[in-house]
Structure formats: C-alpha cells, structure tokens
Length: 135
Image (cartoon, rainbow, N blue to C red):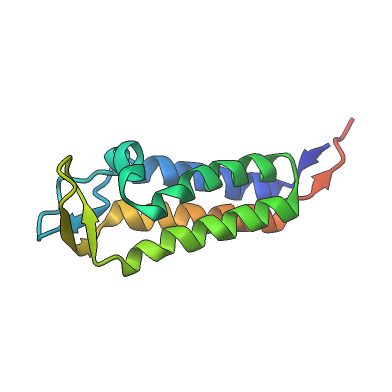
C-alpha cells in the first residue's frame, strides 16, 4: 500500500517550500531584514520563539502523511500551521545571546514560504489515504 498521488505531490511541494524557506530572510527586526535567514531561525529559533515548535510538528505530519495516517497527519499539520501563523502576531523577538528583545518590523519571503509549506502539509494530510499497489 502507498499513499495517494495527490498526497505525495502536496507532500513534495511542502518539503520543497520548506527547503526554499531556509534560504530566504524570515523577518525584520528594528528595520534590519538581512540578519535572519530561515536556516538560522531553524537552528536558533527554539531559544525564544514558540512558533519554532511548528517545525517538529511539520516533520511528524510529513511522516504521518507518508504512511497514509490521515487523522494524525491532519492534526499535526493544522497544529503546525496554527503555531507558524502565530508568529504574525509577535511584536518582539529575542535575537541575541543577551536575551534582549527587538521589535519585529516585518515578515519576509522565508516566513511566507515556511507558512505555505505548512499549508501544503495540511493538503497532503487531507488526501492521505492508502491506495493499493498495482502489480
């Protein structure tokens, strides 16, 4: 048994969008937009951003969708999407070792690609179902 073709395509798009988000700026603080690319947020974001926890949920939803576990994949992907979207409402973030918060002044391409990745994960979850293999 394999998962449906629609789910696999959406899953691949989700992974591609996630990978693309790592190469782009994610947000601006105090008007400076080039200091926080997606890969650095992925590595250091757990230090001060609750929305970072969408990343392990996204990974778990990918795995659940890959194995055609529709309900767990849907719950995980929608929870990840909600956590990721919550960053839109952040007014400040910690961006240095001293723990000083700086105001968020904008969201960049990396954030929107990351959010789109969560959306495609939810689509993959919605279409995740077991399809018999052809002989």
